Length: 339
Image (cartoon, rainbow, N blue to C red; front, side, top):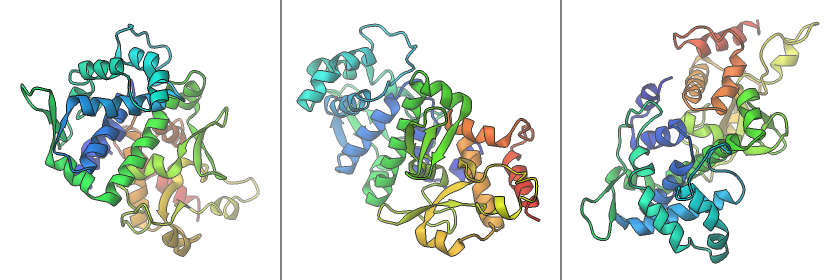
C-alpha cells in the first residue's frame, strides 16, 4: 500500500497527519517534537502562536527525549551551531529548570522555519500530504505561526488526539532506538520481536523494550480495531489479537512441525477491542479481516525501517515480486497450510 492508497482508505486530515508522522523521512527526530508541540497548542484552541512559544514547547519535547536516547544517528557529524548540538549542550540545564534555556529557544527559532517546519508536510519522496496544518504568518513581528483549521479539527476531538499522541510517541521511540549504536543495527538487520509479558516490541539481540505493540501499529490501522473496523478510543479495553490464531501452529503442525511463518510475530498481530478479541477467540479470519490485515501490513511496509524491516523479513527471501500483491499472496499461503 502506497501513501496514496493509505490516504484513500480514510481521506481525512487525521490520515494526512498519520502519513506525516508514520511515513515521513526520519534522518532526525525533529518532526516528532514539532508534531507534539503543534498538538499541544492546537488542543488548547489556539489559532495563532508566537514562533518563540512554539519553539519553547518544541525544544523541551526534544530535550526530554535526549535524556534517554540519541535524536540522530550516533555517527552523524554536527557543527556546534547545529540545533541538535545546542540541544545536547543545553539539555541538562533545561531539564533542571523545567524549561528550555534562552540559548536553546533562540537556536530553535532560527532553525525551525527553514528546516522541520518546511519539511513536516512532505513524505519520503518529497511529495506533500493532502492537508496543511500550519503556516508562518508573513512579515509578522514578532514571528507568528497560524494553526490551520485542519489541525484544529484533528486536535478538537479529544479521543482522536490522545491516540495520535500515543502513535507519535511510539514512532518516536522506534526511530530513536534505530539511531542507537548496537541496538539500531540489530533492529535494522533483524527486525523486532514481541515480549508478550509487557506487550512491547523489543530488539531481538538485547531484548531492550522499544515501544508498545499498540502504539507501534494502531496508526497503520487508522486507529481502528482490525476485527470490527470501529475506532479504538483511549478508554477502550484493548487486546492484541493473533489474526491467524496461534493454536494453528500446533493444530496443523503435523509430525514435522508447523511449516508456515511465525504466527507470534508483528505481521499477524493487531490491536483490537478486548470484547471483539474474546468473541473471535480461535476462529479463522474471514475474507474482510484478511483484507484489512493485508492493507495494514502494506501500510507498514511504506514506513521506514525498522518496523517495515520486521515485516519484510516475515515475507522471506521471495516476497513475491513488485506488483503490490506480496501480502495478499502471503496471507493466502498461510490459509492454504490450514487445510
